[in-house]
Image (cartoon, helix red, strand yellow):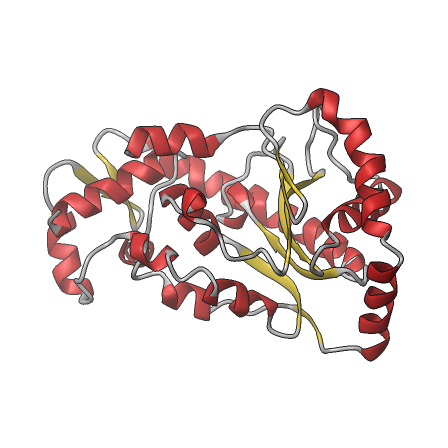
Length: 284
């Protein structure tokens, strides 16, 4: 596929989310060997593509520029709230990483949207981590329940993975997941969890080969170094098999209402709206 068609494909992908792109973003997310902004610019100054206020989009979609700018203002407010909460829940010893995912990661959230977070836990402690997170978030009054009608600014535990299962299998390697990983906004990590996660999922660059710069530019605000006390506590929790108890308590509660969830011992995914299926079907 030539560069021109790849540009159209990228704009079509983001058009699905009503999201126009800057030239820099278009370069990052388009699968092309063109590195020069000048050469890239000559390709987008053709039919089927329009621009307004430094944003590029498909023809007759000028209205999404105003939508993006409005959502960006709202998203900045949500991010301030999210960072305060994430700083608190990062004290949970079984949490290795927390990032903002979904629409907020791209500053594309509407006023009534929730806040999706992606968590990497200590290995084989995902159920315990979820239990602790739910308890803490409920205490803070910001936990999003599955069928909540007004989830504004509530925290949705979108994905919790044990750090031994962060390498995505072939069946999970697609354009949508690649975008979700690249667009992830990392806010907390222990040691070097974020880049280790990216290193285990280099397949994302087959879909988005120009996105590496975006990843390297992230500055993670909350970092914690290795802690002997924390590591000993985790070992004790694993030895006591608390994970099995945590799974039993939660699974018995939620199993009657499982729809879009992916439930595995070291991998928990919850999707109130399954964009993955819609997007992959559209772009296959």
